[in-house]
Image (cartoon, rainbow, N blue to C red):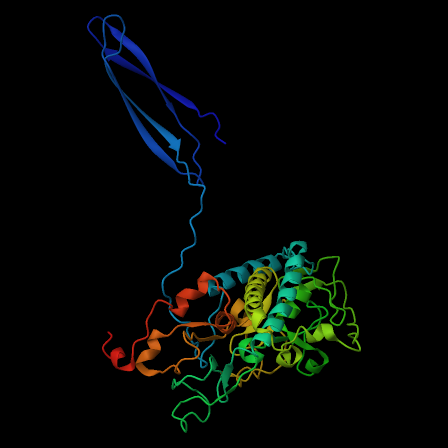
Length: 443
């Protein structure tokens, strides 16, 4: 809304033959805001000064008028081609997802409050309480996770998937590719060619597990007590802490927030003994949450249902990824900066299981930092095959003409599903792969 602008008057004298005439010009100043843009308009008025009192001269006035913004939003444009995802070196720590300067600034502010004896202000879920608006999101993610496992278990009966027996390479096609990029222990004997075997659903959905905690703000997991806690998919644990109720995996629901001064918890409502998890005689609900044996649990689909299952699987994949991204903006998830370990909770566990770069210096402890969505729900990029039944993909000079896509997207695409536009730039659909002889002539 625009309020009535203030008016400023200036008196001007204009001489003429027998005297002077006083005229008043009004300038109106509007209230400007950062959210609105204005255009400046200029207006000139000419007149002559006569004996009867008419004005002789030029009047200049400036006005600001609000520019009308278009109500139709432009469609989000994606680039034509993007670079392939970088491969992070194993002999180096992962980069921090949050700038290190910001981490130091927040820690400095917390330390200053702790020195003054002031409690740290905590909002849900940082204070142990649930976020009511995210409970439906958690249920949607869990339901979509079940649909995703079931759909892939059925599609893998139709779409062939191969995995390297020596490294983590996965290929979705009727035969493995001929690229010499294997990093396995015996790659020198095979001239870096892959040793292909039949893949499984774990090659498409990389299993990322985490410890289930009854109270994330309670006692930390020690190395000696690590076998007392169940390992479940990290996405399932995130949904449980966000409000999903699973009888087999109970979780503590607080009614009073915890209190902290600095890094020290001064009131957590007491330590409650974790109840023994209830095991059903036929825990079918738990089997649906795990990828183990999914291809054996679900039969091959009918030829007429392949397209429908592929599209449902693609939609479920997008729902899971969008929901996990939304949940991780509020709920804390930690990841090791050296290995693939993930922990859902305000701080990491103390199990000494890290065996990556310089683990001897850390006595096997993990280097915890804030996790990203790709660490909780890995996309597992694979080469995009334009003709699955055609000749195998070759490496060398032709490698730069190929694109990549997440493994789930590639499986659904070969099954006939429509994929979102955001995946197409990396797949390089508009690039024609030349022959091996023509590739040498391309700059």
